Image (tube, rainbow, N blue to C red; front, side, top):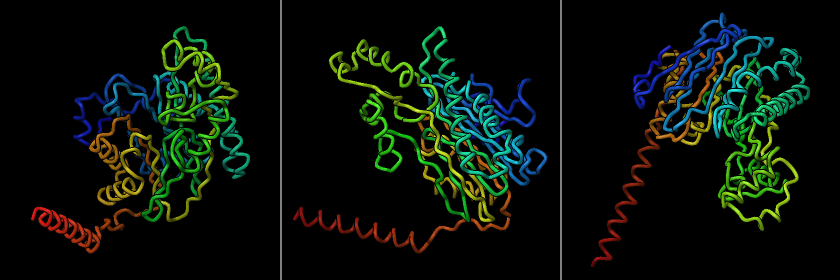
Amino acid sequence: MALSSPQIQRFLLSKLHGRSISKNTPRNVFAITSRSGCCSAIAIDAPSSSLTEVPGIRWGSIALQGLREEMEDDIIVRPAGLQGFSFAAVFDGHGGFSSVEFLRDELYKECVEALQGGLLLVEKDFKAIKGALQDAFLKADMKLLKRLEIKEEEDESGATATAMFVGDDELLISHIGDSSVVLCRSGKAEVLTSPHRPYGNNKTSLEEIKRIREAGGWISNGRICGDIAVSRAFGDMRFKTKKNEMLQKGVQEGRWSAKFISRVQLNNDLIVAYPDIYQVALGSDAEFVVLASDGLWDYMNSSEAVSLVRDQLRKHGNIQLACEALAQAALDRRTQDNVSIIIADLGRTDWQNVPLQQQNVIFELAQALVTIGIVSIGIWFSSQLSL
């Protein structure tokens, strides 16, 4: 399925890979499977309930390689199969694609098993759901680490993952890493997740920094051991099961001295796959949900993204075109990362009757006058100095 946006189609003269379903993929599972080109994308547009157990929800999704040399992101949407809940996830890989490749199938299986096929979601016992999803993520990570360890060639790959379960009146999120979920409620953006990064002054970052230091690690230039800038992820066995080997390798590569590591005592994993779980009520004012990798959010804030998608839906109502427009906006801002986006239009909004967001003319005029005033003062001051 070709992308609708000519700009994205022409981006770096890339090849596009459309929606595909493998022989072993259950019906109604749409996901990227090809990675050979510079860009890849999927499109899911379900205007009726024929593609989903959750009436009214329509899906749009896209994944672009962007300016990166490798495509290490992946996305998956499963509109059915969880007792009235849909599943969607964004995987952001690093150090190779093998961790993402394993997780895109395995993580869903672990979640389904832990949630008892979706029965826990229906029962709305958040404590039970939270425990189940945490167990599922940790179990998937253990399986991945075992797989990475037995490979003949050294594999230091890892991946973040943010998964969401969308029901008729509830949204559940299981999150590790630096992708983000944003809800548009009555036209306003609500950021639902916090990125797991070893730098910054927000509560989550400070907690991550404390955990890493208590485990015996250190942070240099915003990176764990001067290496990686995300603090929760799957894989990354050099920070889990191969920590001592990582220290010795650092000595061999000249990144630190033998004397330095003799004082280092790593007593716990520096990177963990323990997820944060969020539960969000979806009332009549909930319009759509955006799940995207940091390739979008590092170049566009949540309010800008929501405004763009909202205006797109008001113009044509096509969630896939809105998703592509959002990806194009990230490219226009020269994002240096892969860009992966999933949008769920919750089907509660009559987009034809939602007015386009108008610019505040008075506010913009006031800004212009202030700018002119400042420039005028600067010119006057410069002229006085030259007298």
